[in-house]
Amino acid sequence: MRRFEFPVDLPHAKAVNQTLADVRRLRWSALFVALACTAGAVGLVLLGQSWSYIVAAVLVVAAVTSVWVGLWAPRKVGTVEQLYRDSPLVPAVVAAKRARGLTLLALVDIAKPETSTRHFALVTRNVEAVPGHRVAIGERVPCVAVLSDRTTRNDSGMWQMVGPMPIAWGTRDRKVIADAVGQIPEAEWRVLKDKLKMVGEVDATDERRLELASKDLPPELR
Image (cartoon, rainbow, N blue to C red; front, side, top):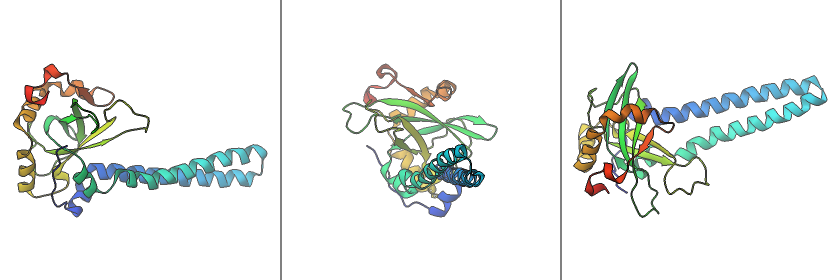
C-alpha cells in the first residue's frame, strides 16, 4: 500500500475538508434525533397510557442508539491525521464541473491487504472546491482513499466503501501537493486521462464506482 506522509495543517483541514464536515453533520444529526426522541418519550410517559409507555420505550431505545452513533462515528472514522497517514495515496483528476463544485475521478485499488491481486476501480466524488488546484478538466489532484466496510460480514476481499480525500484538504503547501503528484506512477495518471469520458457512467452507479477489467489497464497495473 502506497502511503504519503506530510504535516497536516489542522486549521486548514477543519475549514475545507469535506470528510470531516460529513462526520460533523452525522454527529449533530444523530444528537438532534436523540433529543427529539427523548422529548417524545417524556411526553408519552406523561400521558400515562399503557400504549404510550410502550412507544416511549421504543423512543428511548432510538435515543440511546442515536447518541451511540453520534459518539461512535468520529471514533470510527479517526482523526484527520490518522486518515491521511493510514490511507493509500491515489490519483484523481477533475473530471467535470458542476454548478456548485467539481466531480473528481479517482483510480483506486479496492482490494484488501490480504488479497493477493490488485483490483482497480474508478471512483467519483463530488466536492465543493479543492484549494490549490486549477478548476480545469484533467487537473491532477492527488488524494488518499479512505477505505471501509459497511458491515463486518464482508468477505468479498474488496472494500465496500471508498472515498477519495484530496491532499489539498490537509495542507496549503503547494510543494507537498506537487510531491504527492510525483509519487504516483505515470501509468495511473494515464488511465484516468483515458477514462475521463466515463465520469458520468461511474457517477451514475449506486456506489459511484466502476470496477475495471484487466484488459482496461496497462500491463504494469495488471
